[in-house]
Length: 213
Image (tube, rainbow, N blue to C red):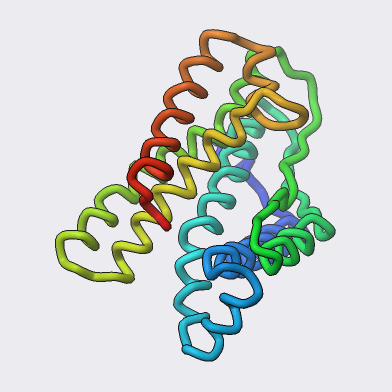
């Protein structure tokens, strides 16, 4: 049976993905606006819709592809895998954004079945790699925005690049339930090869050049 035919989504999973996507879009829009005060400015200035659209297409899509990558690889290894949103954490993401910082743990893909350490590691690695791939796709979008002087396109590309690099590096931290812990438990060389470049590039792009902010 092909992977496409094995990759099924229940109604609950589709609902959880949609709710998480929208909640993260709103949370990141509020966060980048500067919290509750920035949100009031956006609402009064008419820029809230555009801000949410940018967040849905950057942080939101980054989250969706991250979780779908976990699911696809898990199913490839014969697992039963589904995403489950954590509604309490989604609420916390929006509340923290209003306070001026962001704490987002929207949920996770849960799978069951017998796996080797290598398969566990590859499932975990798939999410950050999806974010790295998406960051690469946002580079030409950012370039077009800069070259054409389009503020919206430049913001979309820059924020998509920055957020996805950050998501990749953060999730590869070898701590707790983050993907990096599972990858490191499987293979130290693979972990180093994935984490170090992700962290370095994310720091350079976000903190040195200030892209996405």
